[in-house]
Image (cartoon, rainbow, N blue to C red; front, side, top):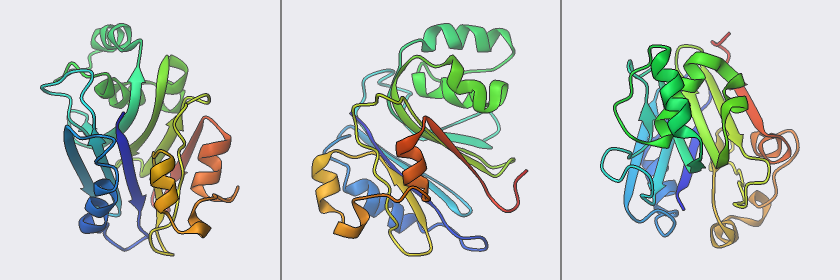
Length: 199
């Protein structure tokens, strides 16, 4: 299955793409088919992809029509054909046949309530540049651990990884505190981080 990684730098700082590339490189054994990166100001999202759905056009991160919303997904959205049909009926345009692209359009249409529409096994990170919001979500019974760590003290990180990946982290990073992004992500279905400039 895929591996996703990313971080949100402090206000006024740009995300370091080289750091993101190093993070994704540690996940290559999970997603040997493709890697993808999206850096937008202080936000960085990356994917090591195992191609299962939409082998030709489904590489990630995937954005919406105007590039203001991007998502990285680990897992599968089982009901994506039905969601895609419904969202097309509401005027959304799709450029892939991927279950991942459904997430950006569902977010545009339903906001945080997009999670109510999803059936599947997944963890994802979605960045909305206009709202300056980062949505971290996973199916509560997701079988893949979703650890979070801070690659540098001033950056929050997210990622999906298996036991081998977690074992590579420094000991203090293996356990998320309840007041960190990772703690929230592990304890609830979703966490939305609104940056200082967001609504």
